[in-house]
Length: 494
Image 1 (cartoon, rainbow, N blue to C red):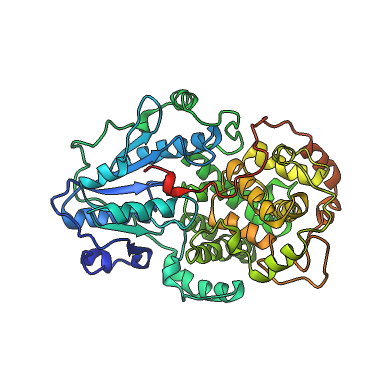
Image 2 (tube, rainbow, N blue to C red):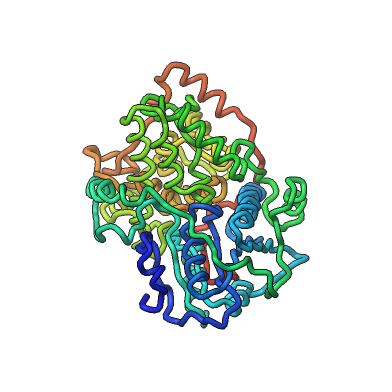
């Protein structure tokens, strides 16, 4: 990164930044292109900050761009509505920050081929997200390989960027020790302010500008698209910055005071912040959440427990995904666990279910159905339920590979926090990415199992499960078997 300006190489957040190609920055460009895929926030956004630093150093404005295609895997009203709501607030926030922001919503009436490449051709530099999962990493690498402009990747998902930690950490406890030592230096931030007026010059296409769009206009646009309209938006989780602020207030006033006691009880709403979808799509970052936690008037041990979930576990999964070519692949399951599961692959499986029954939460397991209805209807699932839900899929599918593909399919299609290093890490835990058990069980071998006893034995537990399992959800078209690898990124246009 020798050609980065001194203001950037000396930047406190410099470990967040890495070059993806060796092409030079072009001073004759019209702007610095800041291409966002998931970090959909205007403030506390290191991707935008790096673009602003580069723009200021080169004397050029920043152009923030966000595009959304019809043909990404599992495109639906649910995902589109959340993403475009967040993108609308991104545009509003960028305008307030003195930055130009344009969008592109792919549709039959407006097809743009190679748009990112065309925007990059007019750019002095391209700044994009360093995301290790789903399609983002593949698309970033392809743009960097084909672009004649310098491309910089920036981590915006973690409090402590993985590059700032020792590499090769092999256990959660070792990661926790290193991460806790590093955290203090990363809590504070400042937004870099542009010194150049917002870009208002020519563009390679006629942009969509969502900043002024009403809810009705967004809904009408989504209704016109060739996506899955049967999977309706989540009423529980609207995509907007206002919802983040509501949840941050609720976190400090309701969740944190009761978190240690309530976090494992899915029937208690104060046991979860429901911030994970907003973290996944970058509508909020971990630094902002930690600032709210530190300012809360609650006991330190309550703060620490929530911080451990947010920082240790979430960032551990991001840290590990960074070294994996495909974090969503069955190949990530430890060899010992794959050996155990595959040794028992031919065991009788009396609880086999069809994919249709699994998708719609209509299996013979009431507890599992209650879990699945949260994904199907709300687009989110309580963390304690996810552990039971994932473990049971192994016994409800014909073999461990199909089970993994099924879990990824349900997670990625239905959940607003699917397609994420954290959710893939949780699935890997269920498939044996933890210490072996001591009992050789049918189907699982030494991979630990999980019962629903802790859920059912809580006061009111059976009644709550019965109510949750009986909820009516959308009826979706479901293939006979889950796609084994829906992420054929080389076939996805940019």
